Amino acid sequence: MDWYLIPGAFALLLAVGGGATLRTGFVLPWLRHKVRRVALYGWAQLIMAGSFLLQSAGGFAGEPAAGSLLGLVSVLALLAALVLLLVAQLGSGRDRVR
Image (cartoon, rainbow, N blue to C red; front, side, top):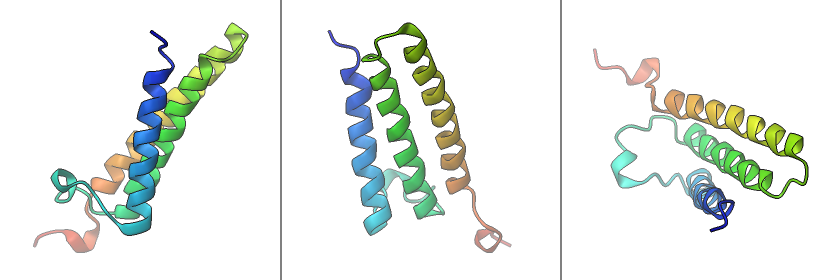
């Protein structure tokens, strides 16, 4: 099995979801009560899609050093996207219950 297809499929799904979130504000129903900042959530999904795309492109790299560099950049981008997802779920000061 070609293992570069799995991250490529994840990249496609996340890119479609992030684009839909940014364009229309749509968030999946089971996540609506958690997400406070919709635009930030959409950008985090697009960054995740980019990181999975880089991971998939690492399989096409001819040299092992280039594949390792793409893998390292994709892991760092994935960590940044996860931080953005967490921040998108945090409530702002106005959302707090008093």
